[in-house]
Image (cartoon, rainbow, N blue to C red; front, side):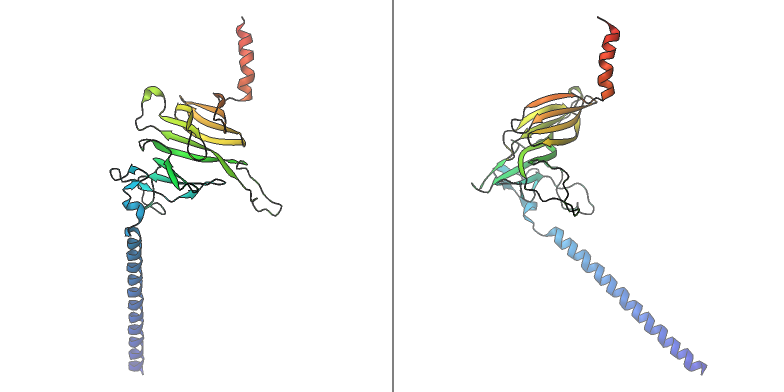
Length: 251
């Protein structure tokens, strides 16, 4: 009786061992197939990886890539970013684009394209399309976001020169352009960086930035790209203290 029981358990252990071995082999095969598919996906001849010439620009020397064309809301134009490959390897970044060096605009009516910048030497640190009506929080009674018909009316862009110099106090420029990437007008030069922007109305944009170590706020017209005001960012207490200090000093 004991001998039969021992044989029974021996066979059970053997079967369990074979099942575990089979599961292990299946896991290894699945992992191998997954790695192979990922490698095949990234090694496929995607067009942006072998782009040599586009819209009159030779891209072979610097290995730039052209991203996907995207619609500019409310206009007949599309745009795509020109950038080097991403330097970071991680989730969602491997095989992607780095920081933009130029923008390519395409007119869907004339079927013609044009570049935003005359060359690809500068770095586009940030860019945003200004909208009419502006991007503001809008919610329906049921808590769902409002669906608003918006039209791009201008482009706010922050560019950085290829060489930085301490004497200028900053190497970046903030500029406004028309929604099709033409008529580029600088509104703040030699700055340290952009702190964001706010669009209180369709014809006005407030730009916050750093210059010579101080925060400033600039008010510009989106249509004419004229600067209405440009001043240090101050508080009510500071504004009230300035007349008092002047009165204390006397004439």
